[in-house]
Length: 283
Image (cartoon, rainbow, N blue to C red; front, side, top):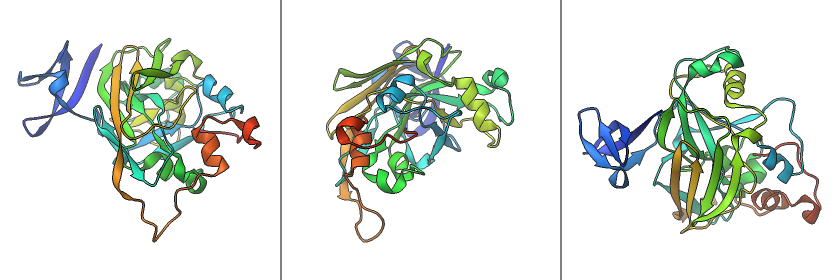
């Protein structure tokens, strides 16, 4: 396996290779990992995320999966990196972590079979598919602001090639405490299936990213919290939560809400307690 990262080195964007505790540029310059300013390890043209995939998440919401995956789109302006700040806008309360594995496309991919999809994958990285559920009432269909607001798609720390996704453990920590603990073996649709499914009608280009779903127990985090996503063989993606300097504008658009829909999603789908019917799908 080889791990590639993108960092800011002497004012320039540089691709480096990990060598133990150091990162090595093509010209031989070295920097310690803890001293590096990271960028997202890839520059995608699109980020596509699956709604529900992990069985534990389905069971948590007391719902059922459709016969095939459903997806939403995160804009590239939501990209963030290892060590970056996740901004919760002032006036919002329900910013949830979702530790995930990201598939990175290696070459142009269109209309491929699941058995051939591996040939189009460059490698894998870690993602945290943050959700700003304060906007779920207005964006539940598109997930645009819920999942696509600025800073809500950190990727990293590196792109790892030659990694086998089977039987790998995924854990999320908040301030050092385990809050999610899952495995790729609980995914209903594996990485190859997801790539082939999307590529039936959407051309995937090198660097494009597919997010493969999160285990149970996504919950809100607060400014000052540190969130880490650890994936066996891929490392650890670390970010911290901050409050935005200004509130969401109130002279246009829908405003943040704390409805039953928002609360039940952000706090884990306690449907029986809240006395509402579970929806067909979640993310």
